[in-house]
Image (cartoon, rainbow, N blue to C red; front, side, top):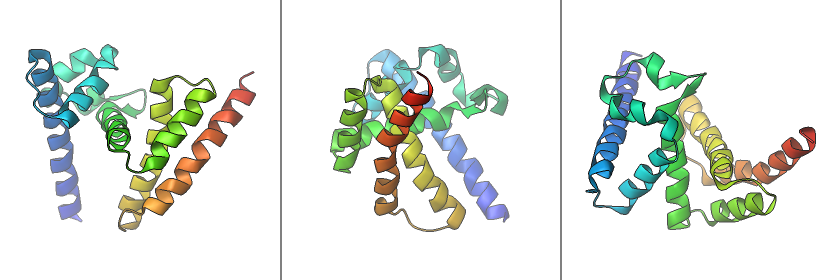
Length: 156
């Protein structure tokens, strides 16, 4: 049990350090790889948290979790979807994004909707201690346009 908690703590710290490093390198214009550029652009899409990115390595848990949202996890998932789009892997991500955009959803919100589907698969991987299953992710992904359509109907 202690090993899992220790691993989670190390992973959390590494994620914070990576985001802080990309943020610093991006501000200097010295990012040297596409994935880093994508993550920096994700951070730029969340300008309201720029102060947090600047001090992320010293930030408390209360700083990182705002209104019930873990901002490190939030931008990490957003970045993961951007990477899936850039690599066209799986291709269904691009198809779902196109569907959401055609339904009038903004790109940023559409990426977050897709990220929620990805999070569902990651959640089950961790909870059930099983390998990533792309078929499960694709099943969740197929629900996203339908859920978005239902959400729009309820808010009319």
